[in-house]
Image: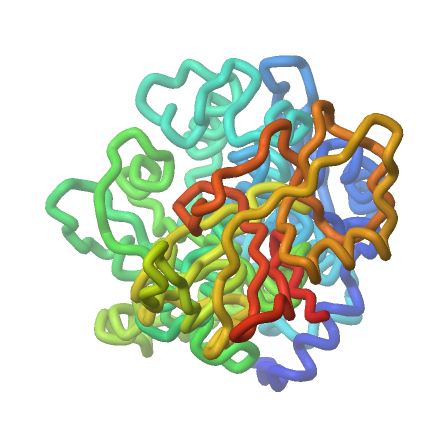
Length: 446
């Protein structure tokens, strides 16, 4: 039996086999076509065209190994969730090299067959949206089977009879782990196969495997791995496939600090799948218990925000002061809105700024005239004068600054405060003088 490599050694090897071209915020079929072709040319890999999307794009399955133990994984069922697609191509790049056999058990290729459906929803990927070209969420089509992509997945499960299935997704960046205020970089679930949440032999194995996967990844990002609750969803593929006797495992890739393209989650997916593959072959998963599974902290939805302004001072018209926190999320590049205000002590932020002693200025708009240009220096001067937005009749293109700008056709009310869903463009002052600003998610002092 081959000894498992140390965590740091394994991660270095995984990183060495990553496809550099897949370090992107989003992936389409065109982005992975070259990697599919390269892998198909390797002796250990079989590329099978299993069908087409609603709009006729090809859907492929990559397979490695000839053993009786069958594992099936599928990625990008939701078109805008690409992290695991890159990760599974990385995993296959590593496993296809004989030089990497030492990281798995002896003769592993004769013990296991691994199938990976890469990018189940290429149409949604092309449009960068969750649903397929019919506008249907494939992961809610397990019963009705009205999508060709859903029918393909159901057919693959029926034909391959997998022992273990891996349902690979991306989750919101704002999921936190328990009460830690840390991002859930990966989250796991062994989905139930009925409303009672029963645990049969297959589901027990899924939970044991997850416990082992959790142990394997926890070396790299302590406290950043969570677990979903066991709510049964009869329309979802994970729950439905679990009902077929498959040990089904959901892995959701999430955010990490200073990692916009989720490359840390990408590498950790490979670590987790490697651990599961090894545990299946060696049956090491049997050493874990249900208690180990439930020891993984549950996710907290919206437990994080992009920027958390703490201890902000505000004044009412009478000059009375009150204090609150302000949570801000970036809704699109360069534009963020207020998520929540008030006592946000249970919320974490990817960036947290202590505003103790800073007073939120009232909204103040600078009106431009036709032909006026606003330079970077002029904009900074306006901010230092307390202006938080620029008023113009049209969306002007002659504002020459790389700092986010809020443009409005009419001035915002003077007393506009940090209400939920309003633009996050604030100027702060000390007792008298404007001294700093939050412009979308950009913090500026002056």
